[in-house]
Image (cartoon, rainbow, N blue to C red; front, side, top):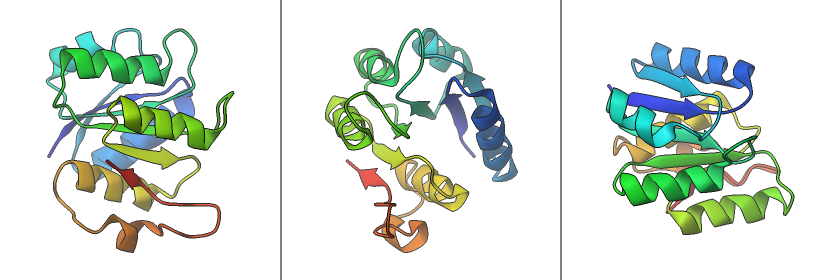
Length: 143
């Protein structure tokens, strides 16, 4: 399957995402901030990055910009549960900066799976499998 780098400052979320993605057959690596993401992607030959937007040190938007400069074709899933400007603003900014997909936290793990499949080219109907449009959960935002 794919080599996925998960970037989130919350260790519990990294562990959950890693367990779910490994169960689906992916090889998963993690980082607690965006500081080493480009270097780490090159080290592990990442096929996908899943990054939180609100983190200490280097935030997700900076991470996305660095990835787009160094690895412009690498798919990126941005995720956020909030920011100083509001979660929708942060996710919209992530998409404008080059994220492939944006997910609003909290989201069901099935939505993570559908998003990963979508950006890796393994699915063409995210709304049907992610509950997009459900109250309080607009579903993934593909680019």
